[in-house]
Length: 285
Image (cartoon, rainbow, N blue to C red; front, side):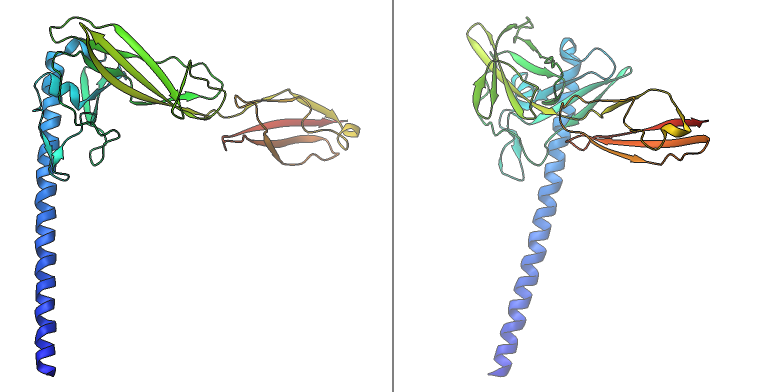
């Protein structure tokens, strides 16, 4: 009985070990196939860029975002091009970027392992081909004006498609404009039409506070008898785009003796953006 139990446990161990090896080999093969598919997409993007030069960024540092749908529309990627990891077609919204770098272009594929938007609809090759100017996720600074970078679109026969409807949503509600007075996220949907055929592409706009507070100071010369009751914030002006509460800390002290003193002002806004500035104070008789 005891020997039979031992043999059973050994057999189970062998089966588990074999299953583990099999799974590891299968995952490795799947990852290899996935890398090969991604490489094919990169090659297709480069080939596409050579044909559609009028859609490429023109200035150093400029970028466009290209959905996989566009490569499928132009025939550079098969409509049924599959992701080995999911065994489904790659989403039409798998995103790629092309950035101008001096005289060359840099090509990148975003969201390789996950798609922001699942889109497996059939491809309409008569609809306009669309790319975003800039990134699919752009940032707007809090309480600063924001100008959308827009899009580029052409028809299947190379004509410019400029009939567009833009829908702006905030928390799934349609709004009339992007309001940068509060930190939030907007979704822009561009619907470009030509000859009754439509293409849709989206962009997310996140309103953020990334600006550091500004510290302005007047030159300061004090008499010895003025030091004791002097307000260290006198002659100091603080500005911040958030219009919120600012935390101020001052390092250093003044003494009722002649000399040169250094005070350091540390200012933090409600978004944890920080600034610091030194102030030279001369104390005289």
